[in-house]
Structure formats: C-alpha cells, structure tokens
Length: 419
Ligand code: UD1
Image (cartoon, helix red, strand yellow):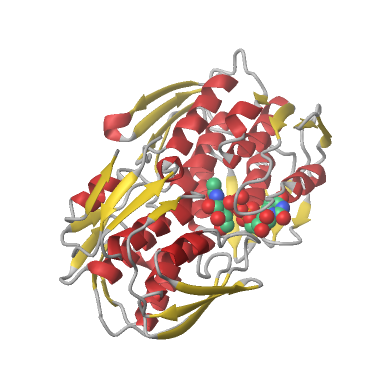
C-alpha cells in the first residue's frame, strides 16, 4: 500500500495553480447522459472522476478521455443503454447516485445501488428520493438497490427540501429537466458547483432560472448539437492551498486560475485569523503572518464556511494564539482527523459537534492514518508544518480528489514523496 513521507517545517515558495472542481465535474458527467455530444474541459485527473467515467461507459455512453489535456468527449447515441448503476461503481464514490435523476427522466426507469454509509457519517439519500417521488416517480428499495420508475415520464411539481442537500438538489434538478410542465425547487443548495451544473444544463437547452435558494425549471427542448463546457475551479483545493501558504509561505505565494469572489467566506475567515491575502481577478497572493488570532467558525452550506475545509482549517488553528472553536454542522462524524492530529502534538478536545483547539502548539512528525479525503489532506498540511518526518498511510483517499498533490507541493519546495 502506498504511503506519503513528508519532511516538515520547510518554507513553501513558488506558485500553485488550481485544477477543475471534482464536485462540479461529477454531476455534470451524470448530466451528460441527457445530451448527445458533450465536450468537458478542465477535468481533474482524480480517482472519483475515473470511477464516474467507468459508470458512464457501463451505462452505454462512449467516452474519449484526453488526459494530457484534461478534456473528455462524451457521446450518447441512445442505443444499448443500461439503466443500471451497480454496487461496485457506487460503493467507492457516492456521487454515482447522481445518475438516478438523468436515467429516470430520459429512459423512464433506473436501478441504482444505494451508496451506503461512509466514514464521515450515515449520508442517506432520502432527500434525493423525496424529490423524485414528488416528480411522480415510483420508488422501491430492494436488495440494496433503488428501483425507480416513471413509465409515462416525470411531472413538474413544487418541491421544498426540508433541509439543504447538495446531492439531492442536483438529482432533483437533473430529473426535472425532462419533466412535463414547470418544476420549482425550494430550499436548494446553491454551491458554485450547482451553479456550474445549471450553466451546463442551459447549454443543453434547458430553461432554468435561480433566485436565492429557489430554482425554476421549465419544460424545454434539448439541443442536438455538440455542447462544450469548461468546469469551474476547485474551491476546496484552493482553500487547502491557501491554508498551506498561511502556514508556510514566508514570502508571498500566488495561487492562480481561480475566482476569489466565489470563496469570499473562506478568505474573510483567513483574514480575520490574520493571514495576509491580496485578491486579484483570477488569483490570490498569500503570505504567512506569525501573529495569528483565534477564531470561532461553524460549517454551513454555501455561502457559509464549507465542511470540506474544516479539517484543513483545524491544522491552521493549532498554530494560532489562543483557543479556537470549530462547530461541524453538516456531518455528524467528521472529526476523525482529530486523534491523528493529537498524535502529532495538537491540543484538541471534542465536545458534541464542536472541536476546541488550543494554540499555538508545536507539531511533530508521526506515522498517521488517512480516513477520508479531506481528513487526509489535513494530515498532509500537518506533516508540512511538523518538525521531522511524517508518514501518512492509506493515501488512496487523497487520490480520490486532489490532482497532482505531490507535484504541486514539490514545485513549491515541499519535501514530500510517495513510496
Ligand atoms: C456534497 C459534496 C461533499 C460535501 C457535501 C456538503 C459532492 C460530490 N460532494 O456531498 O464533498 O462535503 O456536499 O457540502 O459534491 N442528507 C440527508 N439526506 C439526503 C442527503 C443528505 O439527510 O438524502 C444530509 C447528509 O447526511 C448531510 C447533509 O444532508 O448531513 C448534507 O449532505 P449533502 O449536501 O447531501 O452532501 P453530498 O451531496 O453527499
């Protein structure tokens, strides 16, 4: 099994560019089922994307992935379509469940494996199914699979989500695009990745408007022509590298190919802590500030501070003066990095949903274990700050979502290698 070895406490110096967003690419790949000919650009080369492409191939789409250009061409000739998403492809990547909406709305039926639990919590799909039922789908759960049917097609409806879910908003949106009449989705997630999905669907010919947390979809014809779409940047990768720079960039470092307006809450919080950040149109410049201040943060749906940056922020907070708190409001079990960070010397206590972090503490290298994608990258950040050598096990989690992680860090003088 592969491991990462990091020799820490080294200054970072250089430039980093941000890749395309994994979480935007996944629903847009699922949405490609709805089109005929699609070209997607700025695709990150990470494991979850490869799994989703395998799933599209399994369903019967033809894909041509030009990896050296981060481009994928997808063709759907509507022949020999398999309306099935098998367990083996959904178990490692929950987003596989996003093919449910497009398959059901286009082909009238779908059989999709239940994604099951995962390390950060139970992560049910009840809200996805709630919305599909409201659109007229008949749904049964049997043998670990969701069986959905809408023989005469889906029917537009007004749906208010009882709580905000990114995946359920995406699945409902993907199903509603071919429903008869008008669908109004209320209390939606409005993450930038959902905005990107809406842009893609508009290119396909769908009439969609969004205002606040309400998205309206009007029955519309689909275009047969080729659609070209460039995926937005990965705001979580950006946040991760901003934190790396805040910890270790003695001189100014530039992070490029982004839009700072999309990460306002992250930048505001880092600035409040005392990190020096200068924004430009498509980049940020960051420098470490030794006098960092404590802060209290709660994770929230967008535009709030993202749960996907909670673990990384926690590493930064081990280096600030005073006692900081992070309340995890989205997932019930997302503090699994804490015992590992404590093994490296961090002083963190968990009380219910809140982590209380005492700083500043000197971190020292240790052998640690990655548990999920974002927890893993927090251990990389901790390893970069810590004195001596850190060994990170189970790094396959990192490969699910960070493109060229070691190369990007090495280009900024980090001492990191995979064995
Ligand atoms: C997406 C992101 C993930 C991020 C999360 C929250 C992708 C591929 N993944 O995951 O990186 O951490 O948003 O920003 O985009 N819930 C239910 N019932 C449901 C669906 C969700 O109770 O049917 C709950 C979840 O357990 C969780 C909360 O709602 O507590 C939010 O989850 P959701 O927004 O759906 O996350 P994902 O779409 O799975």
